[in-house]
Length: 517
Image 1 (cartoon, one colour):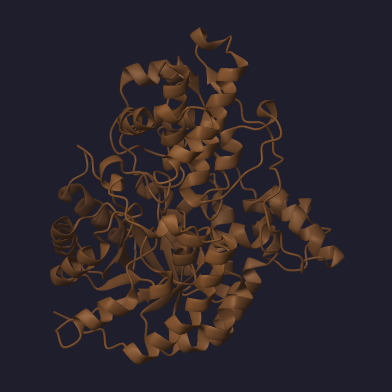
Image 2 (cartoon, rainbow, N blue to C red):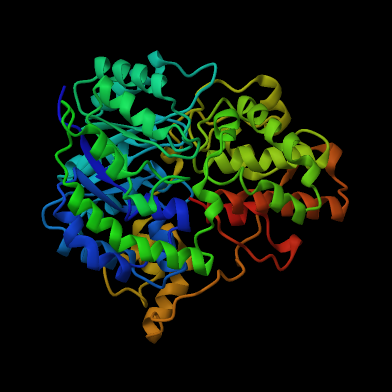
């Protein structure tokens, strides 16, 4: 038994989960020194959706945010979430972009980089791990937790060993949907701890209501670090609360040693901010509740809680249960991927298409085709020949690491934005989010970054077209509109973001899903 360490998530995942990543840097900075004085294992302060949200909604430079936080957090390591070869974007990037991003993240103040892949394909995180090690950072490799007929303690323990052998300094179990139940957590931690010698950390969400109990059983099993959020920004779709866990462990062999009085001061800082967000509608109290459906359908976040109201917009509320039942069927067809970005959006949207068109795989978004083809990596279970034939036709699957097919991109990207560059990091911002970045650079150049957008503007992007099977060549426009609306609604609900659709023909749900995190 040893003292348990705690990572505080309020600066990243807590507000990402509750208020769609809308906390501004100026709201964070006054409390950083007090957070730094607590004695946390780390402060999760960057990555995930924060990068996109900064430039898309807040008119802030995410690199500047990182530098400012680091200047005040002099004692506590900073931590970020990185989507492996996807970085902080929504596709696989070339190795030179991945390596440069990691280099710059660490140079600007990042200490611990938590690296995950949606499919748990280790090939998709190896480049980032090696880059992190080379730059002197702490490489924390993730296992995305899920349940299925092919996922087992043995598989997770094997995956952990592979990541350790790659050079990872620690392992994180990433329970993004709040699926991990207390006694399962106990067995999982014991299995992984018996497989690896490096520290093990647990990240979970309170969505299903079991997370606090899960942390306690994980601690009993020997987990080294757990993620929590200060109480005003905890629970619901966020993490378990920091203070109750600290209090529960006092006087035990796992005592965190953190000061409840100091933690109370942190909570007092965020409490009026939470009240303000509720009053303005930024924080919907619905996301603060418990949704046990997460344990049944494995859909993360607030996607389930808002699905009924969203389906009303498509005049298809009667299809709610049918869509929910279709999600695990599609997940099975696609090789049991963990439901985390981007696989959650792929599976969710395909389920909506299947139900509202009245025929399974009548309409197939290119992202569904991509996961079956292997563009996202190797799925946990093989995809059946019938599904491959239905979706790919005669096309061959990709069996290599997807990034092996991507040519170097860094220098060509640098040339594209020469007129806007004021720092080396700008090339990375553009590489990850070119359209949003260009708009941001123009605002910065004109001196108008002090005017944050209240609402997202209609997305203007290249159309993403659905692949159609022969039986779906002539779709009724009303049917397509219903499908698109419901798919958009599904994407919106997962993170609470709202989108304005100007034209069904010019905007697809997969343009929108690129905004989800």
